[in-house]
View (cartoon, helix red, strand yellow):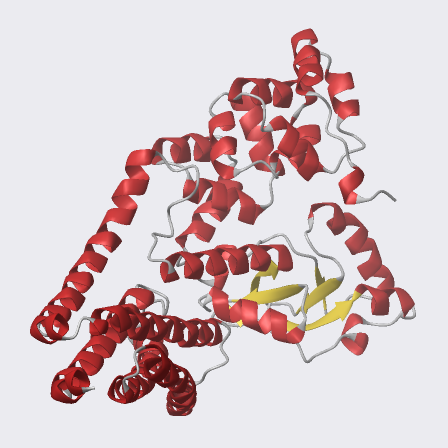
Amino acid sequence: MQDASSFEEPGIGTVRELLAKGDAAALSELGRDMHPADWADCLEQLSYDEVAEYMELVGPENGLPVFEFIGFEYKKNVLEKLSRSTVAQILTLMSPDDRADLVEEVDEDMQEHILSLLFQSERQNVLKLISYPENSAGAFMTTEYAMLRTNDTVQGALEQLRLQAPRKENVYYTYVVDGTLHLVGFISLRRLIMAPRRSMIKEIMDRNVIFVRVDEDIEKVAREMQHYDFLAMPVVDYQDRMVGLITFDDIYDVMQKEATEDMYLLANLDKDESIGSPLHRSVKLRAPWLLLNLCTALLVAYTVHLFSDSISKYVVLAAMMPVVGMLGGNAGNQSLTVVVRALALGEISLGQHWRVLAKEIGVGLLNGLLMGGVMCIIGLTWFQNPWLGLILLVAMTLNLIIAGLVGSMIPMILRRLKLDPALGSSIFVTTATDVGGFFIFLSLSTLLLQQLLSV
């Protein structure tokens, strides 16, 4: 065994030297003791032409395990450099879901090129997989899975698995179908090995099989796989016939993608942007959100402008005003983050919305009294003005109630509208707490201006 941190990447100079010599055997040997993911990191330091040359030298069978770990954009550019025969072999060796993902993500010209290299059955399989809705179970499933029949014997089933295993993604659990391919059960490899050889599969299989349908939302599938602690989930069509299998590695990618999307949306960023996006594309993707934020900022500025006379008469208001708004914004984003996460994990059902709102309002009230109490003491000690302390106490309490209400309500409204709960939520929450906090604080200060000035 070897610790993951103990792997040493070969020098790029060495790799380039072997490429120049065309030494396929030495290149294969160089990466043999490394995990394909580590070897892929090393190869990504080379140019597209050099990686293409490596794939041609070692051959698709030896190169594919590494090639699958190369980043998508890099992989797409390498494919354009490879010969038709090498691309065709790579596509044939890839699993159906990975092949479909590749076809779906490349541009139209590359799609036609890839599809033209596939056998008719493989091409039809790819076209069927990419025809499913983007976030459905069908779009993420693989059609290569181990399958047994109810009338198979254990001995016959083991022989079949030996033949099926090299091309299947998961054989730890094998799914059982009847004569019309309806999913009727499953059996673990452990139970199969331990069962008497002459036993029938239908006698020893588990009939309590849990499955999802092809049109099921992939986020829901991910939650179910996490709930049941499954390594794989069978997928059936509308007639309960088994059509595919979703494995945990696919679900992990989905969870990572959804977490990234939520993080981007909470930060008011487009989910299509990455660190490697060109300058003009990043500006194009960020500018609309900034323009929306500018409009909301102008609304906040207008609110403050309404009370400019009061601020000019008692300048301390200008110093304390940002405290009320900023604390409300932070409290609102706390509620927002908790609720968005709960919605993403399916922890909030339709009937629980009011309970969540009540809880977040309660949190806002208690935190508002606590923070407002601190600000009241500051108003008394720093400015020696009890009226200012009272105004800060009331304004802070009311604004944190607004923060809890808006921070929990906006993502739930977006979910009701079939939109991502994180979509622009932070902008709306910050606007509500800034406008609400400033308006309450300055309104109270205007009403009690004479008392503030008389101290």
